[in-house]
Picture 1 (cartoon, rainbow, N blue to C red):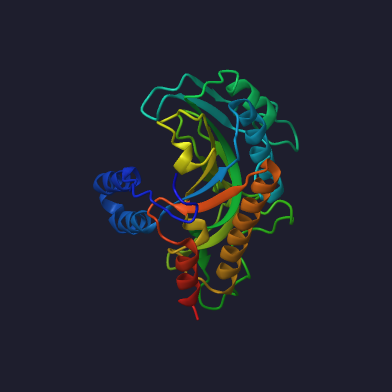
Picture 2: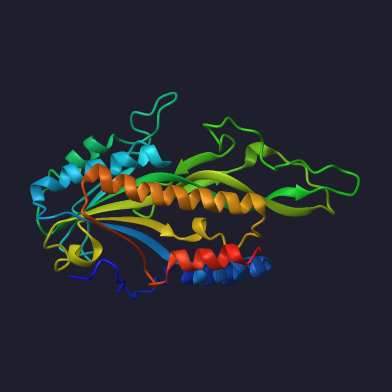
Length: 306
């Protein structure tokens, strides 16, 4: 079994890079933007949190998963599960169970999706030691959005922010969050049509900081799935997606930007401690797909603005 402080995963995901290359070829007018986004994808890394439990019995996995999923709500996450998938034997096999809950049970003031306990009970009804059980949820972070907002013309006053004011508990009220449930790679999208900004011809398009949900995947492993993958990946693994929200390498980090990055990092650290405590894990490891240290990259990133 891998030592908890060691990262040995060397795989490099190229799917996103190939997608950007294809978009770049198709859109001749957006080559500069495509190249910028391609560079960002090449620099980004995928971030994971692995959790291990002593002498974990397969029958105890549902309770551990429920505890981990339930801890998200206290650390910036959504309350409910948006989708569940059950994988047999290894990742190359077709799922034996898939359920996209969408807006099931969502009413005024409530979150879409299914209660974690319900989603876990439904997926783990097929309890096998060579299965993996994946759940998708939303987790709110600050991210830099380019192309939103304008640089005022001469004689105009610049306001403190390009986004409309929002209540403290609803920082992304002007963002319409959609779940694209067409396939397993569902993700959240943002619509800003309601802003209806009038942009003068000579104005420069800037960007803004916005807090909204990104999709995370929580996977529980049976002991025989993928030849005992839990030894390296953990009995439960959380896939946070790219590390972009914790570095924001495309944005100029002024005082406001650095504060948002700091908030994201603090939320990540608090979530890691929260899921460990809630589920009773005895070991945890925050690691990246490329094996780079997030702490080292963050220190270098924040040091660049000093």
